[in-house]
Image: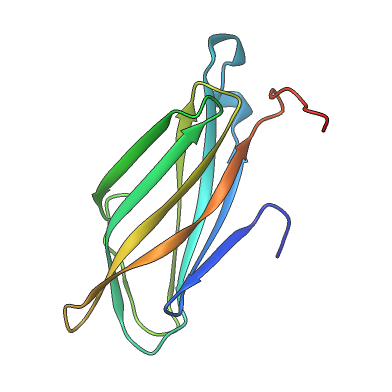
Length: 134
């Protein structure tokens, strides 16, 4: 696994996420920290799937959880034939200098069967978080 790359595989659907901190959009003095994350979804299976919905759990350094649910991703519900992949970049703000995100995508087969695909948990780290020595 490459440094900073998080990967999960569910039913031959691979989800790879790479988060990065956006210094230019963040204002640490105002407790405003922003990250982008690049996601690649690859269909390594034999069946065509369509991404229907997303469900994110975003937890900040204080343990506050924000749930995000909705149709598709970045306004789309991509269809992935066997061997195809789809990439997008999105972002999230937090009031703390670090956090963690995880979630699921709901996929649908051409026969109507639906199943959830794991989005790997990934950490949101900024250079502004205090260093903790164990």
